[in-house]
Length: 292
Image (cartoon, rainbow, N blue to C red; front, side):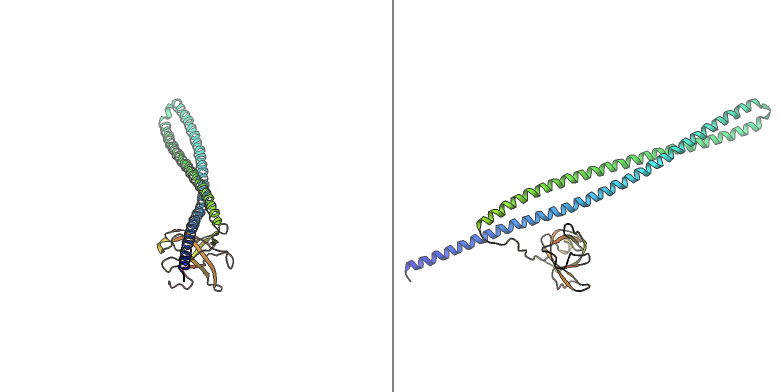
């Protein structure tokens, strides 16, 4: 082989190595952007679920506080009516007392009987006055409770508005991130590498785990499972889903979007094989799980 042939072979080898390095760099860059997009999408989905839950809780709290305020207002109305009744009784007793005093002055010969009746009337008046004071105290307590309920309702509305504004900011940040990812994808497509962006690699947790689906959301496709970060589950992990009854079925793979102690949230990586996932379906790091 001549020296020129050896030089050409060496140049071909160097060119092949450079091309391979370029392809690896493009693939690594594309994978990092896709992972960032998946994390951002999962965070947005969880935020939307949190906003929905918070809005429902705030509506329930508001409804409950409105009902409590109505009950307090009813009690205040009853106390007011009772107060007016007691005042009427006091006024009637005062009139009777004055009549008895006039009768006492007119019938000095029957002073003993009149004095006894006068004392009885005075005792009744004192009793009615004490009951009226008790009604005043109860009315003041009801007004205090009403003010506390109104303050709690206002604080709940303030908390809801604050959470709503925070989620609006998160949605705007997600929109901007999506625009950046679209620009990055267009730039990668212009390189003509032909690398597929739809492949989803399985990423099971480090330990063999098994749980069940606790809740499903048909609108968003999210499912809540009974195992979480305390079992080694973290965002990005994948779990296999299957059903035992009435007959064994493999349902697909879910990818974890968020994990907390004792539970996590995920979504199917592909269209369901046998309809939507259901509460009670089994999730595990692998189909033939060894966890007991």
